[in-house]
Image 1 (cartoon, helix red, strand yellow):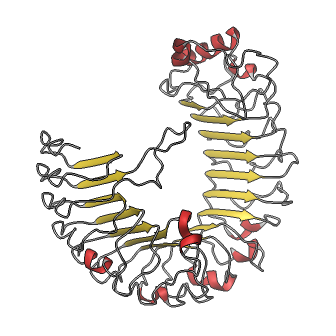
Image 2 (spheres, one colour):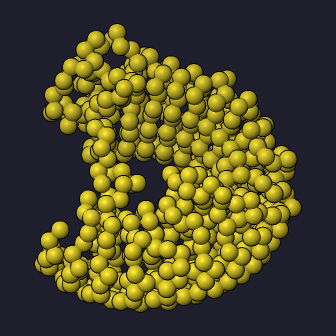
Image 3 (tube, helix red, strand yellow):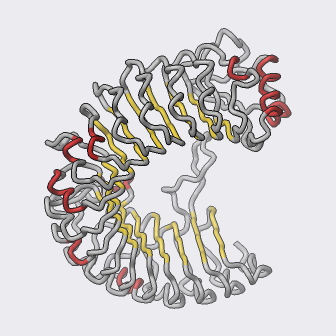
Length: 488
């Protein structure tokens, strides 16, 4: 990389460099005294012939000049991806205004060197440390960043089990120097049995957002009564009494409740203020009886869990719904009866073969719809009639065996449709025998983008379908022509 690459743009305030470079010129930033934000990502392009994107695990940036940041004293945000094992403790000495720092990649500086590195950033508000060898944390790691408000500590999943087979331990007083902390993410694939101290949150009483693999004790959340958002991977130590400490909670994400002895409806009873819920359910999902203020729900039903028609009876304020089910029974016709304010709906199902024609009748304000049905064989022609305000439509229907040509008739689409993404997958190889016939570039650019797939082979469109799709683009001026319509 030439050292004078950026010499002609001295007023630059934001710079992002991504590429396959093992080192950087020491005077690369000499002319950028006004720079506020710098992102440098060094990686190698993946060797797979089907890969269009770099492999984020193959980092090529192995050496960063010690004095690289000396010309940019006004720098406020720094993001680095690479191997930083040899990064000196004085690397950040020239950027005392730094407020946002992310070090991601392969090797991070040794644990003993990290406190010295951060000692030069007293104004730091956000810190992310994510690497393959983040296997221990010094107790004085955060001593030099007393104003820290957001902390992300993550061991990359690729190496967690092989590099740290005995597990990782977090120092009990790790957060003591950061009483203003508002957001905390602690994520490792492997933690020691006693890796999370029970009193870790004692020193951060104003914490608002927390993500971690599990709760180490029943009283872990007691010191943070102001918590507003919580994300857990498992339900260890989770009970109504535990959640009662966080009665102000508004956002809750629970990945796995299999190990909870409590029914979902009982777990959520103390959380009447909850507005956003994401949950994987293994039992009957009558869990919403005590959360009347929900506006966003992401629910996945596993195993034999049935989908009751009154699932949303206690959620009249719901505006966003994502529902995923493995059930092969039909979707209840009146599922959305109690959600008149719904504006966004995503349905994902692997076993359902039909969708009720009047499903959307109770949702006149719907403006975003995504349907992912692996086994759906037919689309109701009048499905979209009750939603005239629809602007975003995404369909992924791999099991469809009949062309939904009726949807291309005049008046079938809402008049304000702005985005039509992905289209249909028509699995009927005998309908179009020339599956791999080259198609004209002009047709691709004007209307269609066919995506090759090893599992679902694209087939050339018929003349009638092309004409209908062209007419669709003309009749709906709000449709984003840059994305076009993609059939796969």
